[in-house]
Image 1: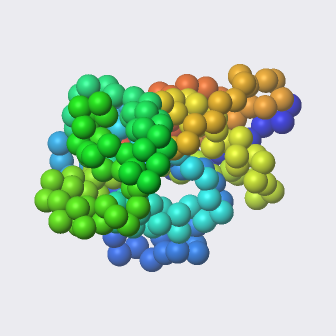
Image 2 (image 1 turned 135 degrees about the horizontal axis):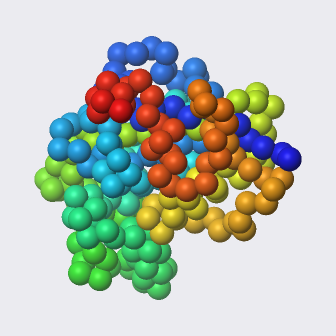
Length: 236
């Protein structure tokens, strides 16, 4: 049986990276990551349960720390679709579906672009990165400024690092798609990839003190993220 064995990290926040040179660009390993927002009340607090995490993006990178830096810069600079996260979480919105719906209208609009936001037809979508023509509104919008400040304080990310240094682009792509489907691409801003069910020769395991455990459902991500940091903060 062919298997990918992962070392899964605990969740990190922006505060976790603060003044820690080991996270500098160029020092990260190859792997897959999932980032989103902690719905805990306090800033820089990692989610205590799947229900307290709002997933946003899944991806892969040869250097996960460099890619994380790029994501944070893009988030702060308005290069991603931006939703009111608290309202989206409370309403249990599938933001991926809303983005797809908006993109269809944007293509139909051609040179006129997509509908102005916010718009009742695109629930809680406040900004879509169509181009430079939206820059003035983005940088002068106080509501977006406050939203991005909240996002950065509640940003959290978990890494899935293959144990084998021989992991190639194909295995990383499979792992990325597997994680994305576990979370559900309808809930992410990431472009969706649909894959068939795992076969016996195509399994993903998380390395744990108690052995290698099959990663087969979304709550497993939280079970395997309960490292020392979670133990300290939540008494797990």
